[in-house]
Image (cartoon, rainbow, N blue to C red):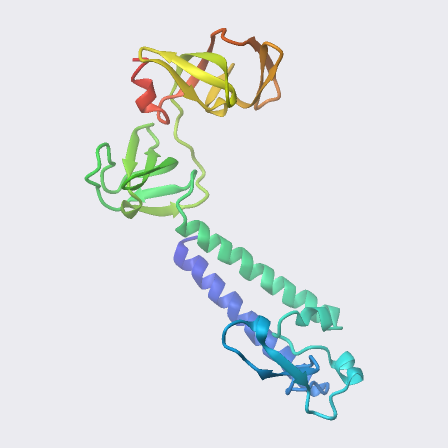
Length: 269
């Protein structure tokens, strides 16, 4: 399904909901609903234009509008919180289903317009940025980084080629792609150290030690989800629940994705 089709789906669902709401209003009027106060028992008598918190209300001028009639008719459909005062549960069930359908479709539209990690994108034009992809390249968005000149988006195609691109050169072609680019892993040496911020992991390479987040490396093929210090040991918990205990300041081997840390990786090449 394309973005145009999803937007059409939202428009159709909204139209159906609005028509149903009109029927409920007709039903409400037929039951004796008061149009002066919309079944709320009060009318706006002073509007400050600044904030609704300062609005002033007075009693409904319709003498036939009483607490008993309002209890029978409920609040006019479409008015805020009208659902809490509507007695026909079947009406509410159908209206709620329509609202849910609109909400889901609207969320789907948003996923077609928001560049997030994991979406499939097509390069609309080749950017002047270094390492940009050729026009027409289909990639998965694998990361992003904010900089002084905006956000840079990192892409990988099906062959594992790594690219950079600004958002203006990208078009989302599938928010839920059925494929993922290959991950390039390289061996690294990791050293856990205690700093004033707590347990921190460092990569050891040709340019010395560089700090890295624990969940960006893998041990025994598994991503590290959590790291805690127990005495003089670091307890690493991997994505499959495995616990690995290592001593502070003692190096251990691990693996790291090359495409995410290409700048740091230059120290290992």
